[in-house]
Image (cartoon, rainbow, N blue to C red):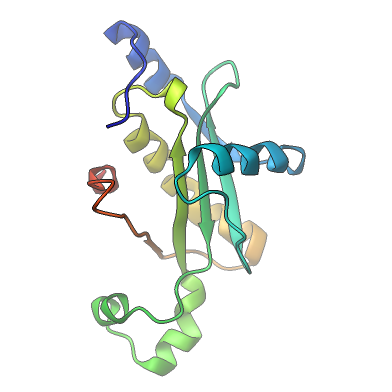
Length: 157
């Protein structure tokens, strides 16, 4: 289990109230990938195709969390059934789906509920950022959680 930063409750709440999410700048990509390699159990991602990288920061600009959204799995039986699309529809509309392929809360900066707050802030802006970068929105975000390592409850925000 991940340990949270030992701060008084009011300081933890201040971090949650002040957290911001932004796109990673080109000059930060090396640091971003290095942190994923060092601290994410899957390492960094060599994503192909459309992708966006986000960093969550505190008020002073210190990094709290890293997120990567990338092209979705091409064929995912349960997703395709849930959406209810045919093979032809999937071919035309798959670009409207993205995969939250990496999500890392930096352990030295973690406080309770930070993951939920960061994910909510990111999802609030994701489709707009995707529209600006790639010319189309995102309508569905998929993710995969290893249940042997994580319970995935943050995704129910």
